[in-house]
Image 1 (cartoon, rainbow, N blue to C red):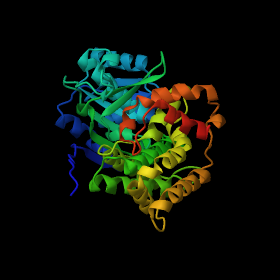
Image 2 (cartoon, rainbow, N blue to C red):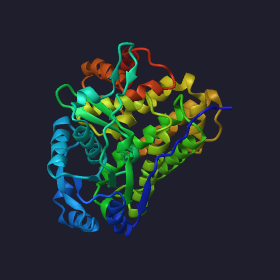
Image 3 (cartoon, rainbow, N blue to C red):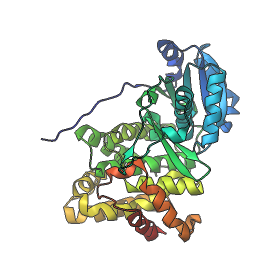
Image 4 (spheres, rainbow, N blue to C red):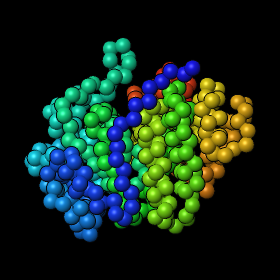
Length: 389
């Protein structure tokens, strides 16, 4: 009998054209009277969207902060934390994709803890083990109105980019999980096809790696397998744009994957994608799709059960240990090919001499510890990068 713990965090999800009608009531339930809206500059300039959200808050909004930047760079997060303090915010409403959601969480941590991010982030202890310091100060309630299918919607980790050296500072605090999520068609329509595609590919990679992880349980498997089904069905459904139904299905997949991967973690593909995206400003989903097939081949000798689950989710006939890996790689390559994605890092102007540093940074990523095949050193990651260069 497998031993596991499956503790489900509280979350309230509202979807549909009437979903924002509950925003004011949710703020009242949380005791909030001065919520600060976080968004990027583009959404911040959309008066219709801003008015929709502020009006839905029913007088419980302290203002709109439109300083969110892609990849959540540390200076922007620090500025956001200062804005939370300036308006005396008692809740946060994150509107947008992963950067808005992560910035809102990370800024809440910085404001509450009053310590530098470099002190609070996940790092290796003297024994070489990755550890995340406990962040004990109370945090502002987080409400999320997403525009892209990102797993950040339901996560507790917040990875902030340090522009000084391109590293990712991972801040982890379960108290910053979203308490309420509002999936509204007007907000979903604001995201371009490219943004949805990138977020969806990142979510697909996380779901696939979660199913191969050394951790997990039957409930997590069910969520991740259905996320794979939804993503592979809908990501390539429209050549020009996604309709409201497809956007909603992809959003459901992101929430399922976000929940499921909390119990499994991810692996080498996500860690490599993180490093490449942070260093070169390339969308996470695109880099994940490039490295994922090579990572699957690397892990195949020690991931038979996981590959069988992925094969089932993809609807592939037969899951014998010696063929499931090849079938999964071929099936995902077919999905990526239909989306006309780049297949080599060189296609994205990633220089070959950057590979050792990318491997070194990836080796310190928290996700790597649950990779099904243990990664002993950065050289193994460099070999994977070389394969897809």
